[in-house]
Amino acid sequence: MLIPSISMAADEAAVPHVVLGIHGGVGVTKKEMNPELEKNLRAGLEHALKEGYARLQKPGATSLDAVETAIRILEDDPLFNAGKGAVFTHDGRNELDASIMEGRTKKAGAVAGVTVVKNPILAARAVMEKTKHVMLIGHGAEIFARDAGLEIVDPKYFWTEQRWKQLQDDLKEEREAAAKKQNSVEKPDPKNKKVDAKGEKSGADVRTGRPGYEWSTVGAVAIDAAGNLAGGTSTGGMSNKQYGRIGDSPIIGAGTYADNNTCAVSCTGHGEYFIRWTVARDIAALMEYKGLSVQQAADEVLRHKLKAAGGEGAAIALDGKGNFAMSRNTEGCYRGYATSDGKFTVLLFEK
Image 1 (tube, rainbow, N blue to C red):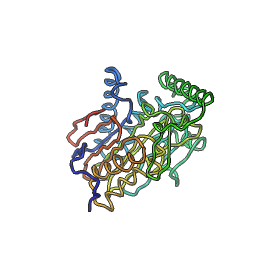
Image 2 (tube, rainbow, N blue to C red):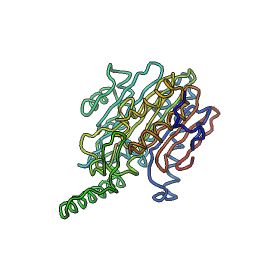
Image 3 (cartoon, rainbow, N blue to C red):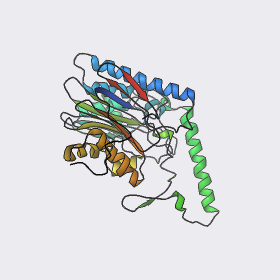
Image 4 (cartoon, rainbow, N blue to C red):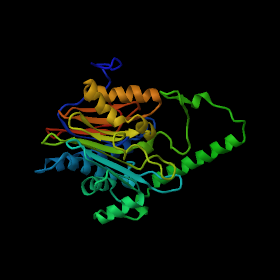
């Protein structure tokens, strides 16, 4: 039985025969985009697709291998908010999060709040395969990554001028807002308030960051020759976030999920909402319990539930038959996919 709110003529349609799908976040708006940035973003996504696909074609390769490879490439690209291009916290640090999950046994691994691990997605996989745990955080995760033989870098490695400038803009905006509040009679602004699905009011929070470029979280989903699914996500979080803030990306069921019986999912957007609405798992649950297709399930969660709550973002999902879905309630979502015939497609704002 289908959920009545789902339209069979949705704006997005699932793409068949996909073996690897990726995303680079919801990114900037069309108005903020320029030709050079667009060219570089498309090139970065295509590079990740090609490397992930090539890894998947090797004998014995798994969907985990493809997901790890594609995300690692995006972590090394300073245009995306993961690894080298991560945004800064309020106090000028880069705190990185990542997770990975495979759909056959539903094993998963994650790291959060790491500051010296060059590729957090590698650390997430190491947690999954070399410990009895699912998530390690902070200094403990960093010690584990070092002992596991992963590359450790000076925190300065993650610094980029663009992200530093973004933080300074955020801090200036924060100071101006505080000064304005102090010098005026405090009155609620109805234009800056949203009511979520539980009737809770929320407005702009200077410590959660602004919607936009800092949401260029990266992620990937894949299926291998054995029919096993995998998904992963990596991020620097939100610009100007509070020290120690963790979003949905390293949380299994919120930003990442994989189950061979339904789908693999990777999300990007306002993490607090994705956590509270368990977005990644909810997409899989709608397929499992309601019999929805992967596209219908993704649309129900992103375009209906999350949008009604005031949460912005997107998700990519891949089912066990190779049907690739992307759903968003934002203007765009950087994403791409590789089909079984080796064709690569990269999209930014296109449907």
